[in-house]
Image 1 (spheres, rainbow, N blue to C red):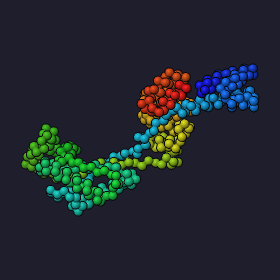
Image 2 (cartoon, one colour):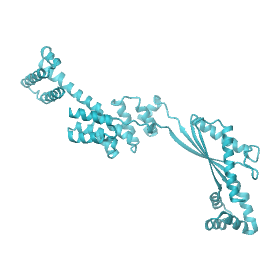
Image 3 (cartoon, rainbow, N blue to C red):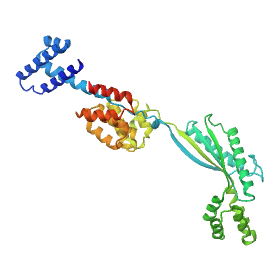
Image 4 (tube, rainbow, N blue to C red):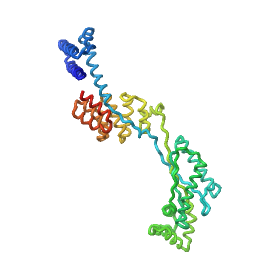
Length: 385
């Protein structure tokens, strides 16, 4: 029954273009009435009695057929749910804390050395990050470093224990989010750091020390050779000038920057006036305000597609939105940007169907089965019927 109705509607559309003379319109009308009787379409039979012939062919049936065809295509189109793109932007900020410890000690003492000022500065920076990120500090990675003096194994042990104690201090002194993760690691003796500091300095002995560091890998041998330079004068100057910069805690702080509210008028205006200043997550959040298939939805995704050409999701949704509004050429352009992405197969099938190529449409719908089985099966059913 449905097949016969669709065939009849197709016949109407072909005959409607022959409305150049009144005689042809009457022929169309007769065919319509005959078809209506054959399929039992009561609504068309009713129009036979109450509606003039020319109104039936021109004003009612032909536009209705066109609207119904596009509505069927819209049902067949699929959109990509951009879950990953909606994730807040994660930003990593690195900072250093130069904590002084008495020889062999591991506990953080705010009163020792310059610790009070150093810890206050660190606390201020962390609190500023908490405020900026709306409390969303997700992780702090702490790495302990020691200066290359004394015994290598002892320096490594001290660096590890001091990093653990420093983590405990942070947890007590700074109110971190409950879901904030703290990880601890340590390097031990920071020979690489010493090499950078000596290289950047204007010390006369710099080239000789750098030669030892480059030619000798064993830490104890390095230390012995440097101590032997100029009867220990060089080592004492290194100890005084550089070692305090090597005893430190390095922090890598990961924060989630808050996304602007999608309904913020300023954000919506920026999408149209300053798209280069709108983040990808904010583009997608604004698009979510509109129903897929609407002109507003299409506009936002098209602007996003031109602003972020490397994002496959916005290209795919821009193509889908163009198809929903019958713009096949724009859809083709956006499909070319994703280079045969499997997620495009279903909508490429719809595009092929709109082009009248049922064979290619069938192939695309079958290829899209792994991505969206239910949609693919439904589209194949509609195609066959």
